[in-house]
Image (tube, helix red, strand yellow):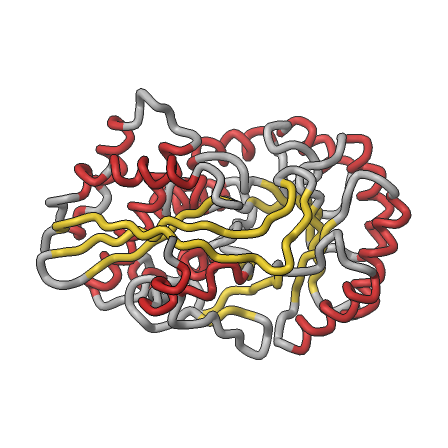
Length: 362
């Protein structure tokens, strides 16, 4: 089997209502480049990467197209050679930013293709450690919501079968922020996991102060309290608090994860499939976490991250964010314990719906 063509399709997925954030402004859409790898035997691998509010999506699209010559003619069984070749090819541009995002799109599709060629889900292709992965609801409990709305939505997540969820806090009004988190805890009870995300908005001192105030609420983790490159600050916060610190979604490739592990910057690592450069690097990151005895969660991309976390001995929570759900035929299913079930379907186990792709195409 040989790869004969790389195809792309841009889609624009609205996010309604828009999500106010401190760093990215108002998030109104998730805009994706869908990537397809066709073969001479009729199989096609699928993957995607995205941008927010259509910003620089054309740059990402061009980067993906520029990598076509690295995969056309490749035998999917030798998919590991993609990263070996790409690492040399991308050296001049560097191993962060758009070059790595472009590689992620191609590697995502290549892993899907390898699974389909073998007739196996990617989780089983790499040797699954579990058949279901603990999952938390992330698509809600935003800073713009009232306390009543937070409690209503939190109860709704529990009714849908989630046994963990994430809310957000900001750097001002610590008492008010803690009251919001406490209201969510009250709504869901003590037996449901609760994560809190500061979205990199705080200083070290602010994070330690509010972190100490939140400790009676028994949080699963306190996520990205300070700007992503301040690993020393993260380590200082980690040392000051009993609540676990989660981070890692904004660094690139397994080398970025290694730097965080060496700095002792977090208790839970959460690599992003897009910023890792695809599954090949994501799995390297996960095995590094295992070596440092740090659990590995995942940031976004639940339809693909599910299989990877299932295949990692130290795999932890899957982030259920429904931003891409509209373009897939299948949906993530939960068991009775709030775990996402790994499907038996080959490849990622989730495939693009052609009608939905046409509807959202841009």
